[in-house]
Length: 537
Image (cartoon, rainbow, N blue to C red; front, top):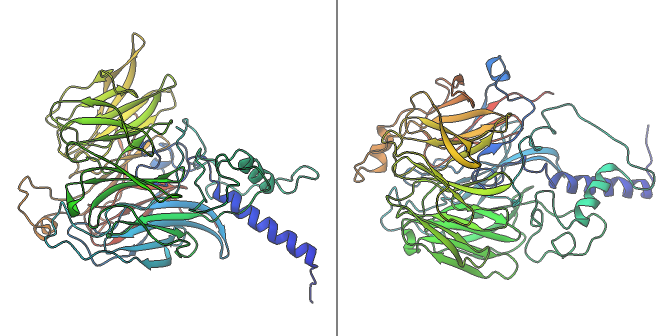
């Protein structure tokens, strides 16, 4: 039997598919891990999840799902970057949940995270390795990839797992004369000049039409391509379609070649990244690239930029960057002109993290002495500071995590040399103060933790981190042990689950990321691991 479809019906179906694809790319308001630390504030917090909870983590179900060997050509200790995610993508291949990983040898790899299958690979033209590579200056691709990210601070319980693959499919019928609900939702998002994440760049690319951008004219929904960004070792920014890795525009010069870049993020058509350790003769500092004009701005830091997540961003776009010399600086968006600076003795050891307290943004950061400083967004005098802690002291804490529990209490989590330390932000006479929380079980060089719906996920990286900087990467790798993933109760630090001997190597350049009831970790041997609750077929 043949079924004949008229041109009008076929055109309608194509339009609906395109509109649905565009709607899917508007996202779930903060539910996708698009940059280091998940969001512009570097919170490492997934607000809600349909399956992951403290109760469910104590039942059977959460487990190792799959692994993929993706890289074999390391640069010193660097192998794979942490994963950025795109859930519910609708393209010419149908529905996809995608993850994007960078490899040190200038490769970009896209995977179907449901199946653990490579979708596509792209090798980017990079720079020759530096003449004397080291652990501090390895060369190759050093910063994770990024997808466009909004500036707004998402509230607790915001969508980020409440929809999508973790719950049954839903449907609805649009009002008469308004078309399908997906078309109507896309039209409303376009009329707002945004993308559902507070920024206008999601799906936009250099030279894109003004419609659907901030300040653009409202109109019927149009499908804009969804993009992923990468910085290759030659310092150029690459813009790629998520569907196949093709580049719609030529790579844009951004950083000096072989710079040690971190924290790539794209906000409102501006890409930002930090450079540290003086690698590739790049000044230590923060860089901004206007994707439309291709103009680069930079700010030179007094010291080396610290933190695995790079700079953090306030809801007004202010850029916050910290150095090992003890300066936390607020910069104007795009121009990177200095707004204010806070100085602390002893130096800082983490990227800043930003959260709201009584509807005002605050900035928290870890010091090398194990203390945590809490400041107003204007970087005046500290509002609260934890005592210095020899047990938590570290030259490289990496990043903090910040989350809010069901009672409304704010928590800060800091990785120390041998454990994760939790602090609660309490109210004292109308001002914030710190209360001692919990310390986790012993871990080997833990990575920065993340929080999913009240469950803290932490990694005992297994990496041998000697104080003797003369030891080679090979010597450090030989003396390292296997990584272990732990799930902890966010209120008490009690262990709920661990990965046992599943992971076959230690973790260094990667880090945790999560979405749609699954999480991902990269290891030194070039393997990507996925853990979580299996999807329901």
